[in-house]
Structures are given as C-alpha cells and as structure tokens.
Length: 449
Image 1: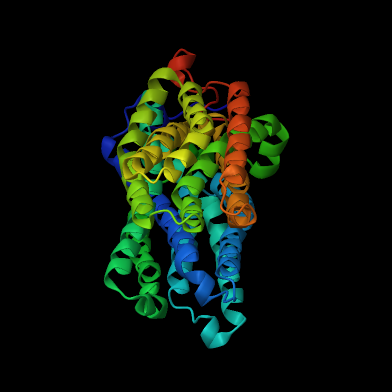
Image 2: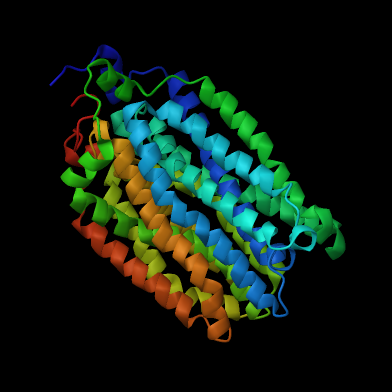
C-alpha cells in the first residue's frame, strides 16, 4: 500500500490552493448545467411542441405520450454510458472522461435544434430524435459521476459536503435557463412561429454552454487523488467488475437511495406540467411556482451541503426523503385548490426543501462509499440506474397514468410514495460517510489502494 504524496494529503487536509478547487467546482457545475439543460429543454419541448412536430396524431395526448417515450429512451442508455465512462474515469482519469461527455451531451442538444420535423421527412424525424436521445443518454451516464468526483476529490475533507454540493447547482441552473427561454418565447411569439422555428432557439443556444464548459474543463488539472494512484500504479484494471464484485450491497442500497431524489425533481418540475394540462390548471401559476422553487434551490442546496458536513449525510438525506413522503398527497391537493399562493408554497416545499435535502448530500455521500480506484464506476452505476428507475420510467409512464386515470393524481402519488419509502429504508441501511461523524476519518481511503 503506497504512501500519499504531500499534494494528495493537502487535498484531504484542506491545504490545496483554493483557486484550483474553485476552478474544478466551476468546471463540474457548468457540465452538470449543460446536462440538465439538455434534460429540461427536451422535457419542456416534449410537453409543449414535440407531440405535434415529431409524433403527429389525431389525439394530442397520444403525441405527448410518444414524445415522452423518446425522452425516456435517453435514460435507457445512461447505465451503459455510466459503465463505459466510469471505466475510463477510473482507468484514464476524471478529466478526459468529462471532456468527452460534455461534447456528446451538448452537441446532441444542438443537433436537435437543426433537425427537420415529421412534416418534412416523415418517419425519419422521430427515428433520428430517438437515436440522438440514446447517444445523449450514453454521454450523460458518464457526466455526473465524473463531475461530482472532480470537485469532491479536490475538496478538503471537513467541507467536502459543502464543496461537492456546488456541482449540484448545475441542476437548477440547467433548468432555469431553458425554462426562462421558453417562457420568453411563448410570451413574445405566436403559436405558429413557435412551431415553425421558435422551439429551436433553446436547443441551438446549448452550444454556448458547451463552449464555456469545454474551455473551463480543459484548463483544470486531473484530480490529485486519482493522479496519486496512477503514479503508484494502483489503478484498477477492471474497475466495473471490481466494484460489482466487492460492493454489490452498497450499489444496490445506493440505487434505492437515489430513487426518491430522481423521481421528485422529474415529477415536480416536468411531469406536473402534463398533470396541470390534463386538469386545466393555471399554466402560468405552475410555471411561476416551479421557477421560484428551483431558483431557491440555488441557495438551499449549498445550505444542505453544509448541514451534511455538520450533522452527517444520512440524517440530511433522510429528512429530504421524509418531506417527499409526507408531502406527496398534500402537494396535489394544494395544486388543485386553484390558489396561486398554495401552488407556489407546494413547489417550494417539495423542491426548495425536500429535493435540496436529498440532492446535496449525494455529491459527497456516494463518492465516500467507494475507494479511489473504483469510485467513478461505483457512483456512475448508482446514479444512472437510480435515475433510470426514478426519472426515466416515470417519464415513460407518467402521461399514460394521467391519461388512464382521467387526470387524477393517485397513480403519480403512489409512484412517488413507493420510491420515497424504498429510499428511506435504503438510507437507514447505508453507513454514515461524513468524516465529522466518523471522528474525522473517511470510510474509504482517498489517495491510495
């Protein structure tokens, strides 16, 4: 077992220069923002436009279902991408994997903005859309694990939860940008203009995020923790096989822990728009509530990260899961009340509070459950399988559930409740990983085999 270099020790003890840590955090956050930009720009367009543009049908709801099915297809490729890029992240380094994934995800979104619709090329339009979504899902599968690790492995041990939570700010940022763009476009353009060319603008603008993210990522150094094991030749030759063989219980429980967070954000920021449409709720109030709640997450996520350093990852995460379980039925009742204040309050409780308390601790908790040599592979498996079940399957079946139930919330609430309980039980079984709650030591080493 090798000895840590002074550089790697500095990371664990907080002596690493703040400049490189901030640069790593910014690079990781921008990449996460680009990934979530893709996620939400497509999901929003699927609700508003893609049923008509790519999946025309005499029944508008059928077109929406088809559009959401294409959205869900991207999730099917995520675990594969997680395995592939997790392998390369653990073999070749976090930085190389991150450069490739941001290009795949961002350029895929840009290409969708250039695509001809069903009216122009018929069946080939939805087929091309499906293929691009699969490719993007493949890229996203490796993006999140590498982005979280790049910051977590630079961060000082005592404040790892706080600094790693910065990466999670990419989710609200990646949501707010396309939501704001679509809100601006829908308020300034006619429906015919939106369907003709207006919907393309948010997709084409993704290129800006790609260029910025690529520039920043090329200027950061490799994670010093990974660099140490590479120098000592302690890199695992088959990291995916090793993590599955050595940590099957951690991966399984981690996947279940991920479910409540993955489901909550998809449910309350995207699926709720289809629910509102089916129940003739005020679209403006829903969008205002979502934007307000997600905007507040820019502040509540770092706070939750700080709390996880002080009180532990599990208590903070479990508190978020409890909020989701308790709020699942009241949320829909508050929406159905037809009161704008209650609508906004409901969104704040489930997103700004409940989701933030789940989402922030993930960025430090999941990495802390694995040693350096297999860390990227372990996180990628947890993150992407959990996202597939929590968000991908929900996206595939949610609109159908709404349609089959005549717009009733029961099916959606049952899905959220089941995943919330499963996550709570899994969290109870997982070990506490916050160094402050473990006498100042890590569960696994962060610099040697």
